[in-house]
Length: 238
Image (tube, rainbow, N blue to C red; front, top):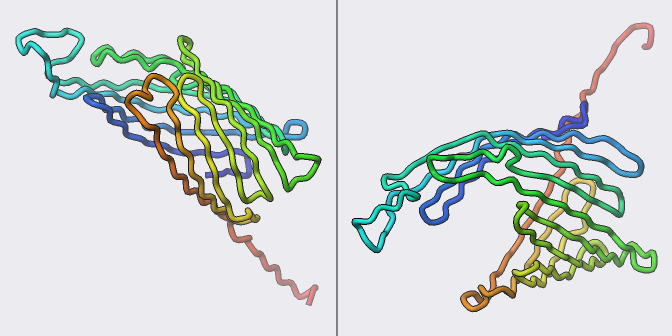
């Protein structure tokens, strides 16, 4: 939700995730502040909230008598504080950002889980071929790291007439993803976008996975508050 008077926005996010015996729940309140800097806009964003992890009870051990102290035998659940922040700068042709999640690195001893800090760096550029805005090449990159391992996404997208795009993304030690899409020409009030990509696995997981499909549908609409019309009547102006 935008707050135009103070160039800010607020939001709320809640998500649930389940993987095997582990369930995760996060609820976060977000705030962003925007300021014109040079030819572009600088955005500063923060979030704060709670994260909770729980482990199920249905563990299957080879030896039912043996007890692994690292696995709670009767299930466990614990929550803690979560916080993140980031900077994002955008102009007509260039954008870049840096952010981090799980800054406190909260440790949940009851479930043997630590919310490890993650770092993200991204940048991209709109290159008008031969100076023609009808043909745009958009190279971009996204770098993700937890301080121990790092993954890099290299992307290149060709956009024609601000409606049709073709591209490819390469994720180090993971996959190559060709993509294509179409969007109704954006106007001042709305935008509709449809896209498709296919991840071709390049890691050792290719022995067990033939890749994955992804379909994206995106619709944006501008919510405009009706102007507050005030009428002033005075016999002097009749």
